[in-house]
Amino acid sequence: MTVLSRNNVVLSGVPDGPAMVFAHGFGCDQSMWRFVAPAFESTHRVVRFDHVGAGGSDLHAYDPQRYASLEGYADDVVEILDALALGPVVFVGHSVSAMIGVLAAARRPELFDRLVLVGPSPRYVDDGDYRGGFSAAEIDELLATMDDNYLGWSAFIAPVIMGNVDRPELGDELTNSFCRTDPAIARRFARATFLADNRADLAAVTTPALVLQCREDVIAPPEVGRYVHEHLAGSELVLLDAVGHCPNLSAPDQVVDAIAAYVSHVSVQP
Image 1: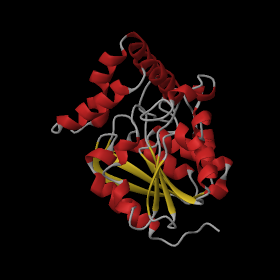
Image 2: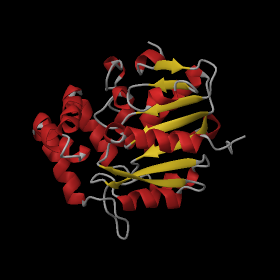
Image 3: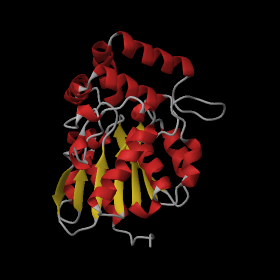
Image 4: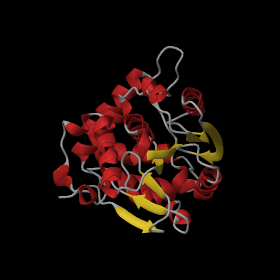
């Protein structure tokens, strides 16, 4: 098993172009980028992959100890970039993959030219003056419900995460994506995601970053996007006129436009 087969890495676009890597969020796979990634194939080497346990990844590679925290997923990202030798790359991470990218960039900054963080959250649980969007009790209840009835939890929570109640097909797609994930792996990934506190890791990042925040998002509220922007040196914040936590599906044109405008700047990385 190679790193590339482990994570079902798919390459497209310009073979010798600058690399842009797309990383999906919890309960999803690389298909969630199908409305965004192709827009960059005429100018970039586009890399898509599945986190171990998702999509077409090698389920035999799943190690509960390695993936008990987001550090294990960040290790995978570094290994993928080393295997491809394409760096420095533009890393586009949605939801939990935004923090996975932050961890990887803090560890190996030479591999990253820029970060694009879509709906990032360094901590989902409120803490003093910090508002993550959930109380500790709410997160405990969410995780307990997953343990009791994962499929029922998926059917309930996916449309809430997606938002856009006037477009129920989007919620249905996210529900189906959740339901395709092995419940045991999903529950562990949820704990690694919702119990993480990566606020201190933001200060370790020297890579320029773009924070993309929806104007309404029940998972990562606007306050969280501002927090990430304020604690990432040299970052930019763009507020999308979009609702929900998955603008890569609900407002892909806005996501494409924001990324394209950002990467058109002259790189500040050596």
